[in-house]
Image (cartoon, rainbow, N blue to C red; front, side, top):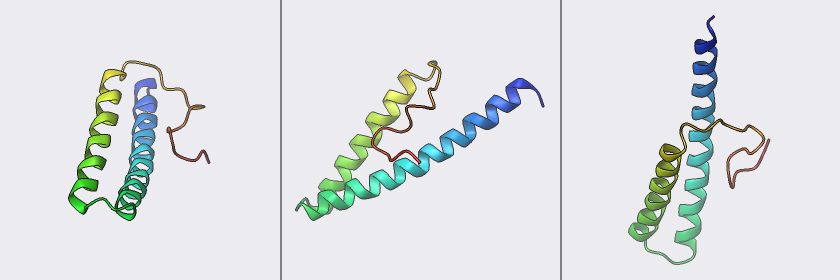
Length: 78
Protein backbone atom coordinates (compact mmCIF):
# COMPACT_ATOMS: atom_id res chain seq x y z
CA UNK A 1 0.00 0.00 0.00
CA UNK A 2 1.40 3.41 -0.95
CA UNK A 3 1.87 6.18 1.60
CA UNK A 4 -0.91 8.25 0.00
CA UNK A 5 -3.35 5.33 0.30
CA UNK A 6 -2.61 4.96 4.01
CA UNK A 7 -3.11 8.67 4.60
CA UNK A 8 -6.32 8.63 2.55
CA UNK A 9 -7.75 5.73 4.57
CA UNK A 10 -6.78 7.43 7.83
CA UNK A 11 -8.38 10.71 6.78
CA UNK A 12 -11.59 8.93 5.76
CA UNK A 13 -11.73 7.14 9.11
CA UNK A 14 -11.22 10.43 10.96
CA UNK A 15 -13.88 12.18 8.89
CA UNK A 16 -16.42 9.41 9.54
CA UNK A 17 -15.71 9.50 13.27
CA UNK A 18 -16.02 13.28 13.20
CA UNK A 19 -19.40 13.05 11.46
CA UNK A 20 -20.69 10.66 14.12
CA UNK A 21 -19.47 12.91 16.94
CA UNK A 22 -20.95 15.99 15.29
CA UNK A 23 -24.32 14.30 14.73
CA UNK A 24 -24.47 13.29 18.39
CA UNK A 25 -23.51 16.80 19.46
CA UNK A 26 -26.06 18.37 17.11
CA UNK A 27 -28.83 16.11 18.40
CA UNK A 28 -27.94 17.05 21.96
CA UNK A 29 -27.85 20.79 21.10
CA UNK A 30 -31.21 20.61 19.32
CA UNK A 31 -32.88 18.77 22.19
CA UNK A 32 -31.38 21.21 24.70
CA UNK A 33 -32.68 24.22 22.79
CA UNK A 34 -36.19 22.76 22.46
CA UNK A 35 -36.21 21.85 26.16
CA UNK A 36 -35.30 25.45 27.00
CA UNK A 37 -38.39 26.68 25.17
CA UNK A 38 -37.20 27.47 21.66
CA UNK A 39 -39.62 26.72 18.88
CA UNK A 40 -38.71 23.71 16.74
CA UNK A 41 -37.92 25.80 13.65
CA UNK A 42 -35.82 28.26 15.62
CA UNK A 43 -33.85 25.46 17.28
CA UNK A 44 -33.28 23.83 13.90
CA UNK A 45 -31.98 27.10 12.43
CA UNK A 46 -29.61 27.58 15.40
CA UNK A 47 -28.23 24.07 14.92
CA UNK A 48 -27.84 24.59 11.15
CA UNK A 49 -26.01 27.86 11.79
CA UNK A 50 -23.61 25.99 14.10
CA UNK A 51 -23.08 23.30 11.45
CA UNK A 52 -22.28 25.97 8.88
CA UNK A 53 -19.74 27.57 11.23
CA UNK A 54 -18.03 24.20 11.76
CA UNK A 55 -17.94 23.52 8.01
CA UNK A 56 -16.49 26.97 7.30
CA UNK A 57 -13.80 26.44 9.94
CA UNK A 58 -12.86 23.06 8.48
CA UNK A 59 -12.61 24.52 4.97
CA UNK A 60 -10.46 27.42 6.14
CA UNK A 61 -8.05 25.12 8.00
CA UNK A 62 -7.97 22.08 5.71
CA UNK A 63 -4.24 22.50 4.94
CA UNK A 64 -3.22 22.31 8.61
CA UNK A 65 -1.86 19.09 10.07
CA UNK A 66 -4.39 17.22 12.21
CA UNK A 67 -3.42 16.85 15.88
CA UNK A 68 -4.98 13.68 17.35
CA UNK A 69 -4.42 14.82 20.92
CA UNK A 70 -6.96 17.63 20.50
CA UNK A 71 -9.92 15.41 19.65
CA UNK A 72 -13.23 16.98 18.70
CA UNK A 73 -14.08 20.17 20.58
CA UNK A 74 -16.92 19.56 22.98
CA UNK A 75 -16.93 15.83 22.47
CA UNK A 76 -15.77 13.45 25.18
CA UNK A 77 -12.36 11.91 24.53
CA UNK A 78 -12.48 8.11 24.52
